[in-house]
Image (cartoon, rainbow, N blue to C red; front, side, top):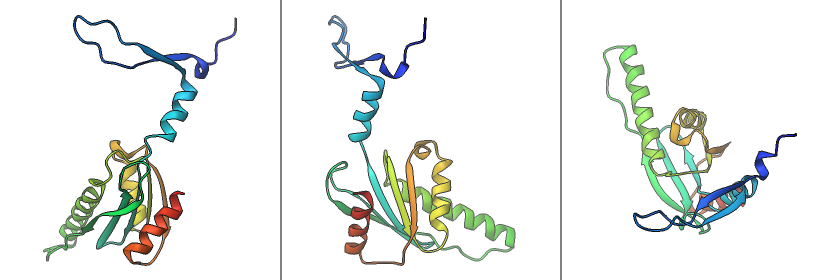
Length: 163
């Protein structure tokens, strides 16, 4: 007897929570592959970031899934003071960069898609950092290079990128 195709098997998705003394919830039986399509077409949280080593502009949808893109936040990297050795300077720089990345990623709650653009190599470093962060390791990322632009042009850029 051949094995059934697991993607076409129905899976029970609870419609209501079970409360003590209440009946079991009703269920919707939907094949797994149809559930995946449903989830991917809904719940997309798309963000864009223009960044360089000193500053970042975070853009996202104003109503999470289907609204227009708007500027959500600006972040600036902290500057480092004087250090007594090259080793201390490198450690300080790495720590400040991780803090900068954490501040940026704090605006990207439950991101499913992210496009990072800007100057230099800091975009690649942010994407690598995201890949090492459990919350963002499954986020679909893209990158490009672009010089700094006005907020209006940046919003238009990300609207075109995601549509």
